Image 1 (cartoon, helix red, strand yellow):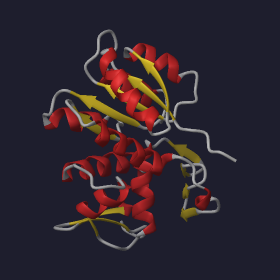
Image 2 (image 1 turned 30 degrees about the vertical axis):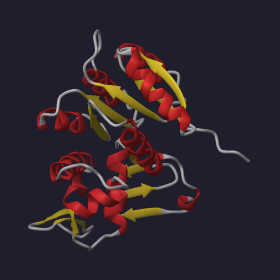
Image 3 (image 1 turned 180 degrees about the vertical axis):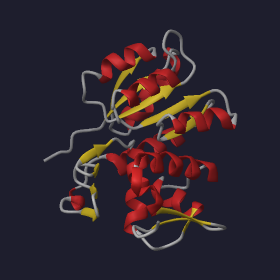
Length: 231
């Protein structure tokens, strides 16, 4: 049985940029659909069937950051790679804090973008190896097959990258993990990122875990570890 190719939504107001991205992604076997602004992107996401979004920040009508906020507010947790022509740290962190999984600064290498797409999808697409893996810590339940987290029976909405980060910490519970190690393993390739990327995701993940936020322990001078017994 052949696998259905992942469907990528390319959102950019520049047709030439969309064409460039589509050409390289289709060459790698992906299916692509397009939108020229955030409003059109939200409408297309509402139809379902999108596995990943490549989202430009600077667009007319509804810009990329607003689109991302509306996605997450509507509990659309489709993974997002942001495109930005601005390289300031603020723009990168703002995207991550609003629920982006990765970012690429224009002008970008199409090969690098394809690598990032593959890396994000490899972490977020369903995997048969996870078929019976569930982690339970009191009333915190992390279910790998459904990519869901429940606290006290209520599902907690995490972005795909927040979920990946939590699972990696849980699988290595009790071990102090450096930021560099987390970047390599959670982002799943030689990530051209910064320590602040990990810190930002840890901050957002803790905010979703309620009384279990203390389970993610800061190990000063090293990084982080998961300790369900930490208070």
